[in-house]
Length: 181
Image (tube, rainbow, N blue to C red; front, side):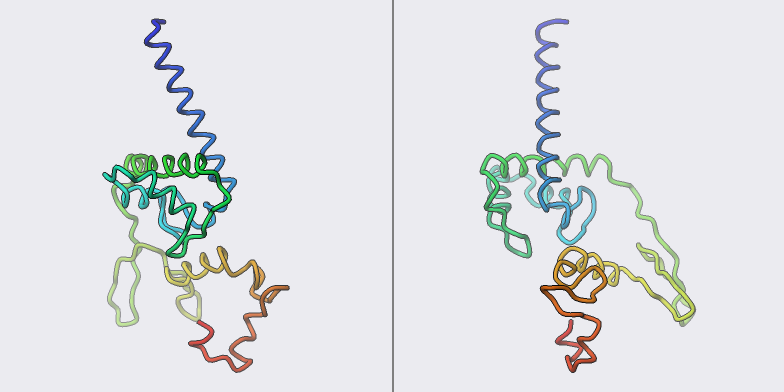
């Protein structure tokens, strides 16, 4: 092996090791409760974040500061070191290229017949039982939000906990539906 090839291999392995360490850091943090590489969970996907910062020369600094300060629904992470935040920012920004390379070319569509007989194509399935539609995209998104934020205080089944009341009884206790929402 030539010395140039050896340098290239060592450089590649070092970059791969750094990438794995950064991914472990992200997975050890609470990032995955709101973000995924290729799809929105509560917050935008890492690929979407990378696209937002695309072409900005100071993207790493901006994103590292966003990780530190939070905002717009994102939790602040002041306890992370500047070096860790910068490595995390570099990793997130690299996900734009990975998401673009692995992005499906077509979105799966699901046919759904409306009560008036019209058939529409949806980008998510609708689950139906004898009482009618049960799970829609909005309902599922609400489920994701609850499981990311609310369950910590109100319990996994909304029956309450030490920090939050039983949500099932909120409306029957006199709270108006708009206040509940």
